[in-house]
Image (tube, rainbow, N blue to C red; front, top):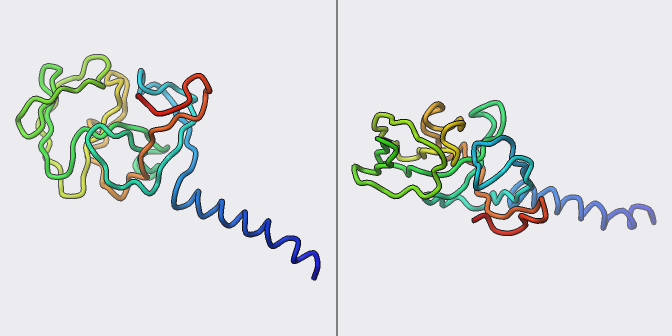
Length: 161
């Protein structure tokens, strides 16, 4: 009986950590070059699972059910919008919008109209990114949350700029 009483605090700690990682935050590693120069490969970040109010230019993580691995991309188009890239310029609902995060040339593509629960996501490094241009619009329920804090490497620790 004494051993059970001694184990209770440890069981509670494990349960709390599991609940936090499942519903609130969890670490996630950046892989590949699709978000260069904003993010570089092998960075460790915090994924905020509770943040479901996605805004344009937020960095989000897409569930691995969309592709063979989780993807980290930037929100470009919001539900109900029309998105177009023409001559390396972004158009939202027919109006040009400055895309300060784009790195490299962005090939033109036809206008895409998003559904009520769809987002158009792109990597910052447009020349190498596997994103909505190939995968199509991403449903809201396939987005796991947002990232914004780099934990490692320590020289990049802090909020993503």
